[in-house]
Length: 172
Ligand SMILES: [Mg+2]
Image (cartoon, rainbow, N blue to C red; front, top):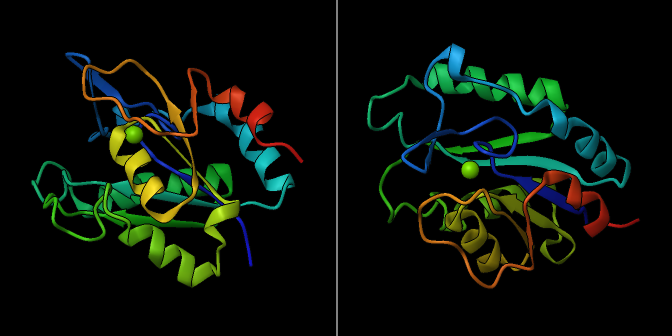
């Protein structure tokens, strides 16, 4: 079985748009900024044979704030830049949707597709919904605390302020 590093998108792979202390997804080309500093960490994880998978909620599509094609374009840029293995996206804004984080649907789809052992895997994200989704399936969770003005997760395995810390958490 494979091991995976599940990656939230906004606030991790690209910069989140922070308004009044809350994070939002970029909607325009000029707002979309790749988090270039994360590349060495991604390369490190790749060298440890982790499968790298984006798990992202993009409800602005359902809300008609952004087109699905534009979201897919951003996602493809990230996949190509970081050389990621796969992307799972949920466009729904319905909290009962099984695929929408904090629900575990996308993680389970990824597990089946890639034959992933959750116990050997990680989820890194900057919001409670990321950590809660990870906890539900039993991966190790890394909360990147960006001090947003919103409810913070509890029961994560690790809390970090800087993505570089991942290198010391995940050892060979
Ligand atoms: Mg995020």
